[in-house]
Amino acid sequence: MAYDITLIPGDGIGPEITDATLQVLQATRLPFAWDRQLGGTAAVVATGDPLPEATLASIRRTHLALKGPLTTPVGGGFRSINVALRQAFELYANVRPARTIVPGGRFDGIDIVLVRENLEGLYIGQERWVERDGDPHGQAESVAVVTRSGSERVIRYAFDYAGKHGRKNVTVVHKANILKHTSGLFLEVGREIAREYQGRVSMNELIVDNCAMQLVLRPEQFDVIVTTNLFGDILSDEIAGLVGGLGLAPGGNIGAHAAIFEAVHGSAPDIAGLGVANPSALILAAAMMLDHVGETDAADRVRRAIVATIVADRVRTRDLGGTASTKEFGDAVARRVA
Ligand code: NAI
Ligand code: MG
Image (cartoon, rainbow, N blue to C red; front, side, top):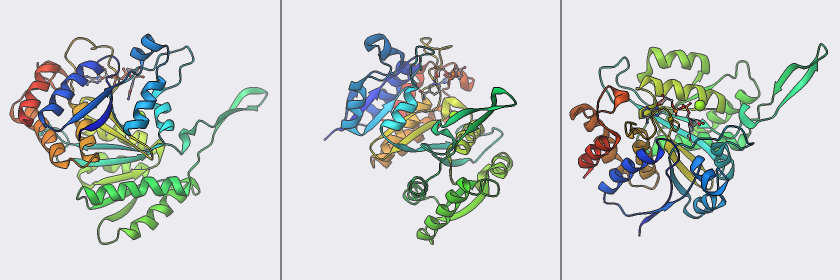
C-alpha cells in the first residue's frame, strides 16, 4: 500500500525544491501516491482562490501534506493561507528541529527540537483600539488566550516526541513570573505532564528571556523545548539562525486532523526560477514526514544523505557558499540515499 500524500509544490522556488525533494524521496524506494494540489499564487491564477476547496478536500482525505512555500497575495483581501490551514486542520503543534550540519561554524553540536503551540496565546487575533486622550487610536489591546486543554495537547506532544525519538529532556519555556495567568497555566500543565513521564523524559523550566540568552551562550544544553505561540515564534527563528539559516530549516505542523510538513522559508521571489535554491529544508521536512508515518529508517537515511552531501561531498548550493544548482544538489542527495 502506498502512502497517500497531498503535494502542494507552491510558489516561487517551490516547484524547483519540490522536484529535488521528490527525487530524493523516490530514492528511498518507499511507495508514495502523490495527490498534487494548488496553493498560493499558482492557485489564484488557476482558480481565483489561494486555498482552493479541492486542496482542503485532499488534505481531509490524506491527513498528510508536503507543502512548498506559498506566497500570500498582498491586497485583495486574501487571508493568510498558512493561518487558514492551521485553523482548518487544528494544527496545534509547530515542530522545528535544528541540528548543526556544517561543522566548524560558530555553533557546533546543536541538536534542538522546538515545539511551539500554534493556535492560542497572543496570536488569536483578538485586538482592538481603545480611545485615549481623545485619540481613537490612543491605546491598543491584544488578548492572549491559553487553555488547559490546548496546553495539555501540545506539551504532551513534546514529551511523546521526546520519548519516541530517544530524547532525554523537555524544557518548558514560559514567563510565569510576569504573565501569571497565561504563562502560569502553561507552566502548571507542563509540571503535571512531566510527572507522567518521570523516569523516561526529564523536565526543566526556563524563563523565556533567559532561554534566549542560553541558546546563544550554551545551545548544546537543550534537547526538546516546548513553549507558547509568541515565544515559540521568536525562539524558533533564533534556533534556525544558530544552525545556518533558512535554507536548512524544516518544520512540521501537527494537528488533530492532519499533519503538514514544509520548509520554514518562504517562496524566495528574488531567486525563483534561477535553479539555485537550496532544497535541503524541504527535503528535511520530508524526512520529518517519514518519521511521522513511522518510516524512521528512511528518514534517517535522508538526513544522513543531506549531511554527507554537504560535508563529505562538499556539494553545496549558493546560500552555503557553493556552486551546485538545486538539481545538482538534489541528484547528489538522491545518490547518497539510494
Ligand atoms: P523568504 O524566506 O522567501 O526569503 C528570505 C531570503 O532567504 C531571500 O533572500 C531568499 O532568497 C532566501 N532564501 C529563502 N529560502 C531559500 C532557499 N531554500 N535557498 C536559498 N535561499 C533561500 O522570505 P520573504 O522574502 O520574506 O517572503 C517571500 C514570500 O514567501 C512572501 O510572500 C511570504 O508571505 C512567503 N512566505 C511563505 C511561507 C510559507 O509558505 N511557509 C513562510 C515565509 C514566507
Ligand atoms: Mg515566525
